Each structure stands twice: as structure tokens, then as C-alpha cells.
Length: 87
Image (tube, rainbow, N blue to C red):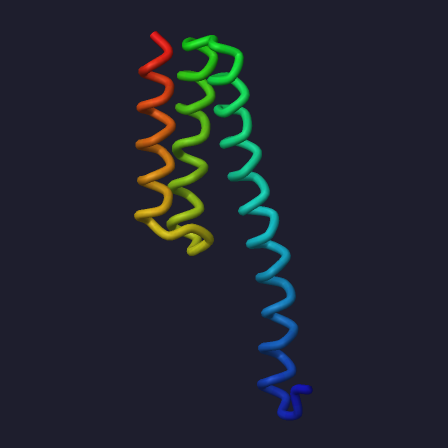
């Protein structure tokens, strides 16, 4: 357990940051799921629109430190390839 005032404060901050990061990660997953569902339905225009909505959300996760840059780029690249293959 935290003893010093500083370590107590850091523990409080960690809890707050964890909740924020959890919400961000959940939001990113939601956008990715929408792209996956559009691809599964076979509708290329819907999939393309969903991908364009998901891409900035993923990159925002990178700037906030929730997702690694290469991970986000890899996900976008693979989804874009799958959307392109629908056509």
C-alpha cells in the first residue's frame, strides 16, 4: 500500500488514468467491430465508410498512448486490404 503522500496521489491518478484508457480502448474496439461487421456483410461502401471513421480513432489512441503506433498501422493496413478485396 502507498505510504507517502506522493505515492498515494500517484495511486489515485493511476486509477483515474486506467478508467480513461479503458474507455478509449473500448471505443477503438467498437469502431473496429463496425468495420468487421461491414466487411462480413459484404457491403464495400459501408465498410469503406466504417474504416474512414475508425482510422482517426485508432490514431488518436496512438497519440494518447493506448495503442502502439505499429499496431494501429498494421490494423488499418489489414482492414484496408480486406475492404479493397470486397470490390
